[in-house]
Length: 186
Ligand SMILES: NC(=O)c1ccc[n+]([C@@H]2O[C@H](COP(=O)([O-])OP(=O)(O)OC[C@H]3O[C@@H](n4cnc5c(N)ncnc54)[C@H](O)[C@@H]3O)[C@@H](O)[C@H]2O)c1
Image 1 (cartoon, rainbow, N blue to C red):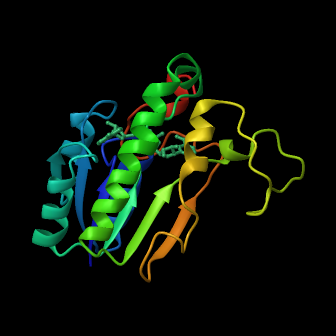
Image 2 (cartoon, rainbow, N blue to C red):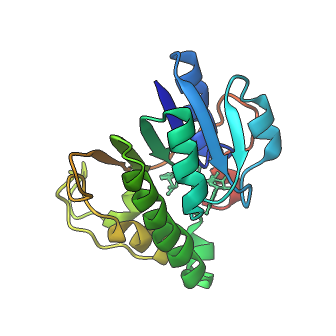
Image 3 (cartoon, protein in one colour):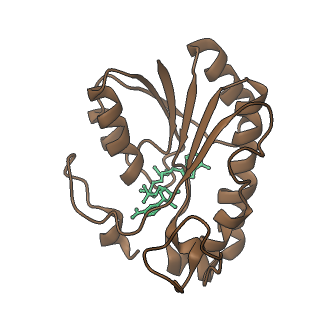
């Protein structure tokens, strides 16, 4: 099975690529390197690296069709809370507008599975712990708010398998020797 990993040169994406390769999947990484590192892309031995933007619909559709991609794992996003408060439109444009363009491209190319990496920041200050999927959405910053614009699984059209991944605190250094996002002020 061939998987397209967007944001594969970033923190979460690069570790996901490593695990996918270890598990025997074929992987193509799509990253514009606006935040990721070419050095990371280069050590992802066995993955194809494509420099490009998730909003380039022709590129995405072409990649999916030419590689026979059957799943998209979407990690290409801006993810710094402080920056999102200083520049909210940058975050809405990248995470919502461009992200939904990617979703549409994947749908046009008939990818059967699309998984995007959301964040527990959609819940804001939790009213109950542990946080369940039906916890009310109350983000306290634009970064968290951008992920509230994404359609919930099942409403994206056709018979998609959709799932948002939400996590808190992926801050342990691991694997590639690259500084985790925590060190950049998350
Ligand atoms: N790091 C965490 O602890 C954490 C926790 C919860 C959720 N997340 C989510 O995981 C995802 C990835 O976060 P991260 O910490 O790995 O960030 P990161 O900045 O390390 O990686 C993001 C990657 O996406 C790329 N990118 C951004 N916009 C792009 C675009 N328009 N086109 C192509 N490539 C683009 C960047 O160049 C970078 O390589 C985000 O959706 C974030 O919300 C991260």
